[in-house]
Length: 262
Image (cartoon, rainbow, N blue to C red; front, side, top):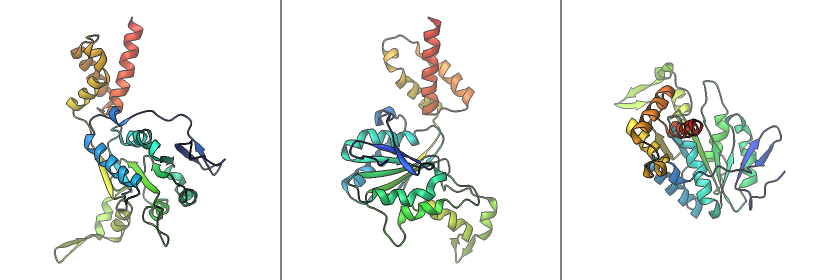
């Protein structure tokens, strides 16, 4: 089934059907819902503004700690800019061999497409990333002007790094020269012009996010802040995470506990 991009804002690649499936229910998260990552939001939005205006923009790598808002930035961008022609196509890492054909179907369309690959990383010996390289910088044919790639990853260089990779590194006339294996691994991440890093929240940052999620209840004095913070700390400790995702999960759990205790 072909996609009507005039009315469809996002689609997901389904390899068994070898086709894109239109997304019917889009996550409604907005930029204002993403807390503690103001610098990342600003740089991300500035780069997208260039892309949507038809100017040159950088492919985007969002890397860092889990649950810190990397994927949510893409969802928020879709909600913010879909009226300006932004569309999102999501593809899994295992299906990157199909990416050139997908892009061929998009390159002549009037909309601006963000190719989104979530949780992108490659282990030793995997070669699927080579299909991504040609889309990022082109081969004999330049990459389409209406397509931008955005990937999220827990790895800064996307490909697993081994201690043995350092064996080929040499210092020649005071300059560091990487070996072939390292050069090959760096060549993929180097094709992303915009790197945005996401780090774990401090306890203070985590509690600020919790306060924002409960701001109406706190303002109405329906919840005791000290009690709320104590429960939030225990919840985070049990999960070994103070991410925004953890704060949202705590919010759901706390509200459910309050509802069942009434």
